[in-house]
Length: 183
Image 1 (spheres, rainbow, N blue to C red):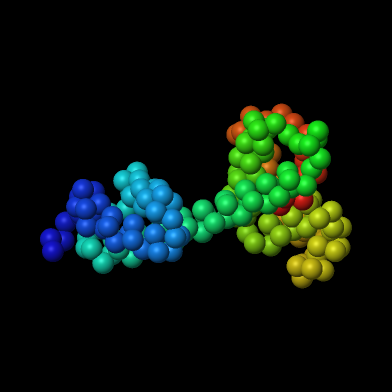
Image 2: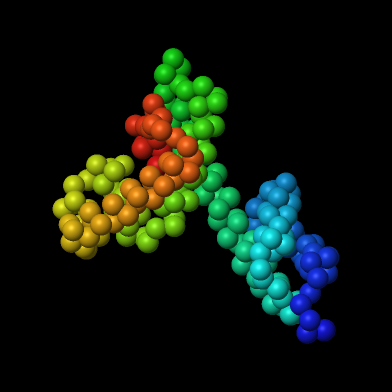
């Protein structure tokens, strides 16, 4: 094969079929497989990666698709936790459909923010804020100092503030306790 980088059309034509089949087997759902295959190729199209040969492209696409599957499963798990929380609420206190959608989007953003933190920082934040553990309890659980716990929580809180600013929210939603239990 020519050593020049492949065109997107060639890449799509050569790899879409097997990638879709691989995703369909993994997900068990044709619609999700089609969506994730398109997402993978869209990321290649909008990204800066170029491939010199088919095996290189295949490995990259499969790794990317695998990551997209994990993201889909996490999002579905988060949606199910939120749905379970809503189902447990008495009818008069259940939020509107619009509010549910806003909270679900915010949960997804918070989940992505937490995954962007170092693992111990994310664990410290969840333990301190969601589980209301003390700095000493978190420190003992993570095997770090209380000072490090405060640093981790501060790092996560800064990310939360940046996320809140980016999303344009001025307040915590009224169902914050339900949110905490959903996480």
